[in-house]
Image (cartoon, rainbow, N blue to C red; front, top):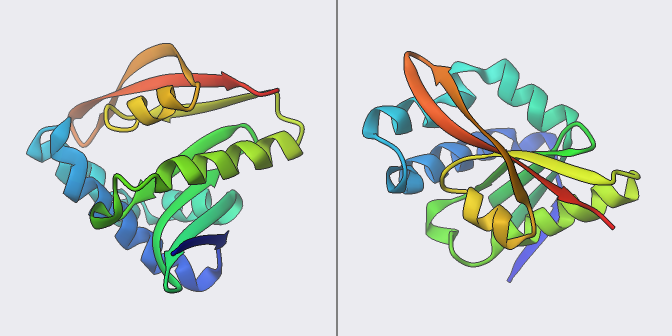
Length: 156
């Protein structure tokens, strides 16, 4: 049975691994091999940025038998910044459950509109959760171009 809890400092290396595994395991469904390699390396090549997102935001960790298998981060109060699931646990609704927790926390903080920068892979999940497309952008990393979708959801 999966359960979720608040991020603990001892989770950090597990979250790096979850991020990397998620991108490597699922990224080729929407990205080239080169893009996947660059994207998957983010927690290692840009460790300070990854650390800041995870540690300064509201981060929830989904576990199975107390072992982290997924996580999501709300940072600042109105942006779902990270949602990643180990590839072998994908398709089980974990990302949706974590997004629901991010939405609850955002509402608790008084947020009226939640945003995210969705990937090609995460866009359908966010759309299923009621997010709507606001804009599409091209982001350049390591000489490669990545499409991201700026999305928002009005909160009641």
